[in-house]
Amino acid sequence: MTERHTNGSSDDGTRPSPLDASSSGLASRDYRPRTGGPELVTSWPLGPAPGADGPGDADWSVETGKYVTLQRSRFTLPYLGGHDDVPLYLNVVGHVSVETGATLSLWLTQRHLDGDHYETEVDLTRTGDLQTPMVEVAPDDPDAIRDGREVYGGFTLRARVEDGTATVDRGTAVQLFSE
Image 1 (cartoon, rainbow, N blue to C red):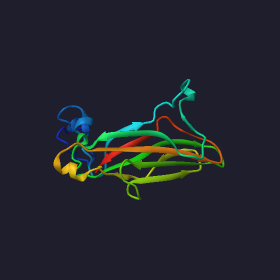
Image 2: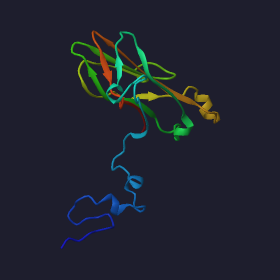
Image 3: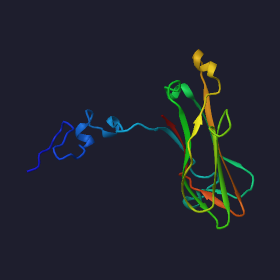
Image 4: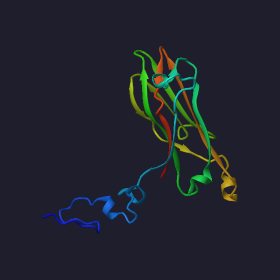
């Protein structure tokens, strides 16, 4: 006979079920990671490309050597909560298809500042999943934060391709994390 423990402990050292430990009965609401680390705040998927005619035509086609904007967003930092105390970061995660011999470049920039900490550019030469390094999101006016005024952040995701064509999957997303 197996004994079931509902207090979150187990005699055999196995991890208890989060449902058993959940006071609300909703594990996703009560879940707390065992280790610290970045926490996903929100995500902005690309969605279907403009002018897509059907499911097979919904990915974003990149056919130019000049950067084109795939996505741009602006958000209010106080709405995100805790921005005075916790750094915020952006990255891109998704899937790309790159023609043999071509190079797809994705460039993620933060709205107000530039440089190594605030933007990232990755060059992709093959089809597959991707995740860019994190870049910091900084407010536009530190004095406004101290005075309690609204502060806006934002990002732009751009793409270009050289020596061929590429597609960026419609599920590719810019993600915002807090520490």
